[in-house]
Length: 352
Length: 177
Image (cartoon, rainbow over all chains, first blue to last red; front, top):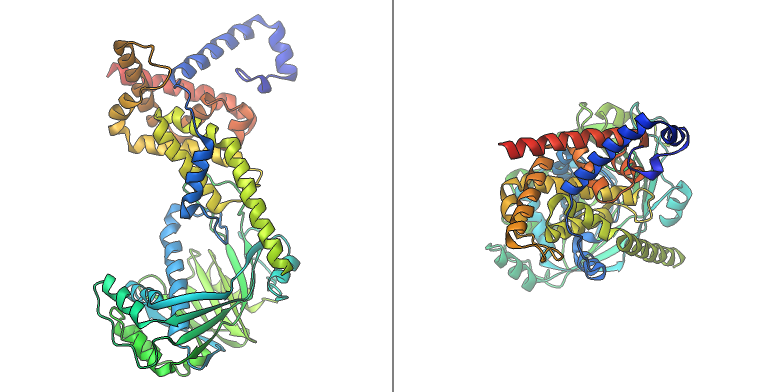
């Protein structure tokens, strides 16, 4: 109540009016505050707001994230980067390795990947051009019905009981169906490999100009956590505590190239480890299996039964993080969060 | 199509909201950073980083937006100040400002030296009192300081008094060394 008019009100103000002792104390405190203000004084800065706005908008990273996760502690950032890398690798593996005549997964399996594999696979994106014939639209909504309408009627799964400690604040997210076509180019592949100082294996006959059309989504899900709480520090981000999502199983169609050729070409890339090659070769029917890349240095995975089908559980029971993924009825389901693996499996089994 | 149009409208309104937020708060966010760093160029750097972080992760129409920006500006500039403590002498010495040209070189030197001592002292304070001082000195009301730091408005006065005492002590310690 000392040096701010807003803070001086009601009984305090009335008392101050008639109490000389308080007035004297008030003066001391006020003088102290002004002397500190003088110590911290700096000349006023003249800013060009318009120019600054233009500079900020030119930064690519200032574009809003498609999905906003307001808060993530610094310690969890490597994990987050890792998750991003794994997702990228998953897309690449799905896109390139198992895209014979028609890829439509009905089950999930894990394959071990290392950082080297992820790097080698991510370079494959430079071996051609991607064109979107249907761009994904992402939207966060406050109601399940809105999310469902964005996702073409796909209903978000319902969690019947949240584990203790998970916030009941829920945000829905939805993605419309997206279709992208990747066109292989021998010229781009050679140029990309040359940039990295590597020699790629020769492209099989007919692969130059071959296309791969990938359809993902629609997807819908819900995020539990206090996402809109301001962070305690500018450099922190709140990780959602629980994510439950359902997506139409991705599909891929290829023209001009056989699944066998494509598989051998991908696995012959420099940097792919023998472990990954072996695991991929051991997959029974590549056109019906969704592969989940698991970074062998960081995560463990186990085969589990969820809702009567085979699923994959990642993480452990420490509560740091775990996820369960399964495919049922043409949809891929994911339950993930900073919860115990046993809780994740329990949520998965009781999902409605 | 309808959904696409709705999405576009939501993108446009989000952009417009961000621009309005930027226009309303940029000068103040720079002011907070400059209060801590006593370097207008670095303060603008910090402010732009703060807005970029905000835009990437939050909705500009969120009611906590100004409070988030103020706190982020205070913490980000204090972090920079702590990291740059060794470089501080040089930086503050360079920060001769418009409006100070009336000072003669000797006075200017003294002003710079005082400013350097105060920033060194500020860098030694705990984050919350340091942020409270920077925000209040930048002209934020008690209510705004309370929102930015997530403390009750009734605690702001006490927090500031303690912070002022701590800063005074640090400044004295710094000059007597």
